[in-house]
Every structure is written in structure tokens, then in C-alpha cells.
Length: 182
Image (tube, rainbow, N blue to C red; front, top):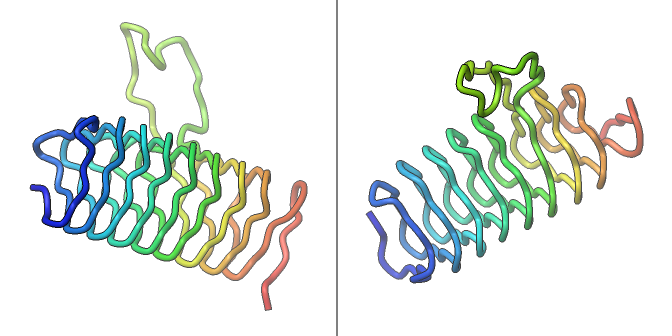
């Protein structure tokens, strides 16, 4: 289903089961897989990829050259910066900002040759990170598997998030540089 007042590039590839709501713009080179649901008044940037079962809520920007591995939920009024990676199963809250080149991971352990593309491929258990509402994340941040970033937190550019961040926190610099926002 494709809503009205939309602007969809003829150079985008959209699976017939995808749902795109009113006022949404899909830029050239975008690939949208089966069962994706995109809300109203969104922008899906050029050359982005939305794998199966991605849900993007209203008024959200998914930046150019970004990738969502699927089975993920991205909240309303959220911005995902250019060249970012949203890992499979991730939940991103409402009113979140991710700067360019934010990367998330969901696989804490790759233990043997049966992972990946081998013929004996195992189903790997995943632990997607979650980002709560009103979080701001700077450019080039890496978020490791299973981490929860609490609401109203601020993560400075280039940080590597290795553990849960409590609500109303800020993270700067190296390991364990966590403070409270007053």
C-alpha cells in the first residue's frame, strides 16, 4: 500500500507488501524489502536499505546510504544520520537523533566456522541494543550488543558504548566516562 501525496523515485525498489504512508518521500536507489511499514511524512534517503519487517514511524528521517537489517522499530520524530547501521531487532525510541555513521551490533560472539555464509550455517543468537526516547547520539558512535541507552541521554561523538547507560546521562571520551544530566 502506498499512501497519497508521496514522492517515490522511480529508481527505488519497493516490495509489493511494503506499506508507505501519506506524505513520505523515498529517494533514488532505495531498496525496501517485504513487510516494511513506513509512517506518514517520512524521508528515506538515497541508496538506503530497509530489510524485511522494518517499521519506521511518522515524521522520521532515515538518512542516505543507511542500512536497517530488519525486524527493527524506529520511533516517530527520529533522525537516523547518513551512513548509519541499525542492526536486526533493534528498537529506537521516539524523538531520537543519531548522527552520521552510527553503528550498532547485535552478535556478541562469533564462535566457529559455522557462522556466516558456510553451508553448515547456525542460527546465531542476537542481542540487539535498544535506544529509549529523547536520546542524542553523536557522529561515529558504536553501540555494542544488548546495550540499553536510557531516555534523555547524550552520547558524544566517537564513543564506543559497551554497557547500559542510565536515563538522563551523558557519555564522553573513554571508558566509564558517564555523568548525569541535571
